[in-house]
Each structure stands twice: as structure tokens, then as C-alpha cells.
Amino acid sequence: METTEERRRNIRVAFRTSVSVTETGEGGRTVTADNEGTRDISLKGLYVLTSEPFPAGTECQVNLRLTGDSSDLHLNILGTVVRADKTGMAIQFRSMDVDALIHLKNILYYNSGDPERIDAELAGNG
Figure (cartoon, helix red, strand yellow):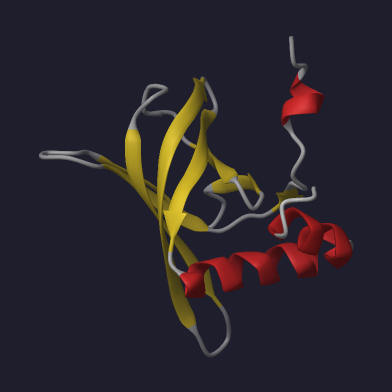
């Protein structure tokens, strides 16, 4: 049986930003959290802080909003809720475009302090 530590092979970094998560499919509801909407992020997923999490197994569209002094960037990523609790939901990434992957990699490079490990994870050796 895998422990939580064994399942978490990817570097997670504390990362706070605005996010909206929409259930895929007809009539899907949306959960939006501004500024402090995320708790952490990795190459494989993120944790969204919300009092209204979707149930595990829910497929969703994640929209991360990255803002700076002169930019407003949105990363769109397909994911699946893998865990929900009273503080939010853990979403595993399933699909993203190359631009979103590059921005996600840069977020992790900047916040992890271990770019070599991020590169190893991208290469499948992490």
C-alpha cells in the first residue's frame, strides 16, 4: 500500500492565485476563488481552496489567472478531482497546451529552488 509520501513524487510549491474550476459537460457549475484560491501546485495538479468542492471523479476545466504589473495571463488546463474535503479539492491535471506547460514549469522553477528536479520530473525521472 502506497503512503501519501510515496504518491507525491512531484515537487509541490506553495502558490496562491485566482482560479476558476468548471465541471465539464452540459450545465456544469463553476467554483471561483480570487487571489488566494490555490494552496499549492505541482506538474501533476493543484489544490483549490473552496467551501464547495466538486466530488472526486469530477472532470473539470481549470482556469488559473496569473497577473503581474503589465500582464494578465490565463492558463487553461483539463483535470479531474481526485480528492475533496472540507477545505477544498485536489485536482490532477490531464491535459494542457504547450504554453500552459511552459508557464507551469516556470512557476515551479521560480518557487521550488530545485530546477534540476523539475527537469527530471518533466523527463519522467522524478
